[in-house]
Length: 471
Figure: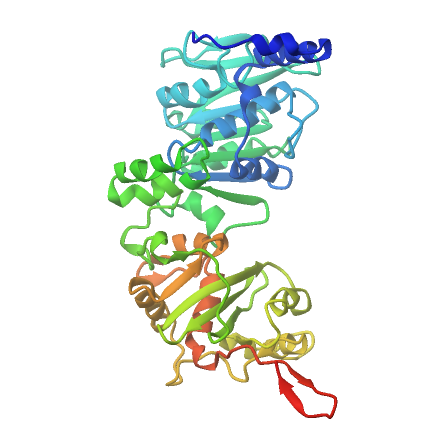
């Protein structure tokens, strides 16, 4: 052990020494879990448990996804929630299932995270003092079947280890409060695990790198099957603060080229189906003030059950380069609620909109575009089309792709909601999948109608004698 200078202790007051001793005993007593300080995306995952029954932490390799879920399982089992905790709580002993693909994978990952390696039990997320009676599983060396965990209420929680290779029938059983799937499960296993939580009003959580692409399980959280009960949190290597910035490029380069975005950023492997096969770094730029002589336009995509979205673009006509500078996306908002965020960008900016804006609202009988115009948005007179009158989706997407590939379409780096859609925009059976594309559609309408983009009008004031003067 390295020697350290302890002279500073002599200068502590009695209160300081007592505080130091309490801190040391706290960490010795609670073990590894006491040192867990979640990153922003991990805290978001935990907090989502308060309002979502199903959660997915979609992350790259070695980004801390397994310990994140393991820490939460420990809190639910022991009832010892930290002060920063904003997620769901149980004030009684719980039943938790932790699982992996095979018996060996369950032992080497979720069991190791929770208990520690074999013969080192108590070095994981669950403190040694909380580990009670246990039983071993059949067929896999050193794999536990169950472990009883001491709960702060005085009772005992039950931790069980399961694995997908056991088959669906082995996943049938009594009610469970919290099910953790470490690595992506087959759909039937996920359904069976989720079913165990119905009687308790419990939760299911998944942590994996989506190497199986846009599978049926992933689509539940990203596609048309997504519901308010399902939360998808995407954690990339940039969110893993324990990895030094200088190391990130080396780690990414070590992955196979076709798996880099999945392993580094948690982006489902899309292969040739990806519509924008462009590196994010090639289109990302830091935000900057828009020069006064650049023209601007907003694109609006209507929505209700899927989000309405707006994208503000600035066009440097000299370089023929378009910059996406602002985005806004919201679900189930009327025009009156949605429009203020867009008006704040500038009521003078023209707004491009799609053909469904011509549809009439069943209640009022008024066209959707007119409802937005009534809020004060500067809606263009006609729906979005190209100069020749066409409005094909493929042509619009191709225009955006060509601009990205030639350095003429840039996105402000902080617009994470756009990049979420950008990463997942793909084809299925040769056709563009209409899923998670709201901001992309809004941007496409604005690009189509860029000929109507304008500069900010100069303010006109009047001198004392009444003659106008532009300022």
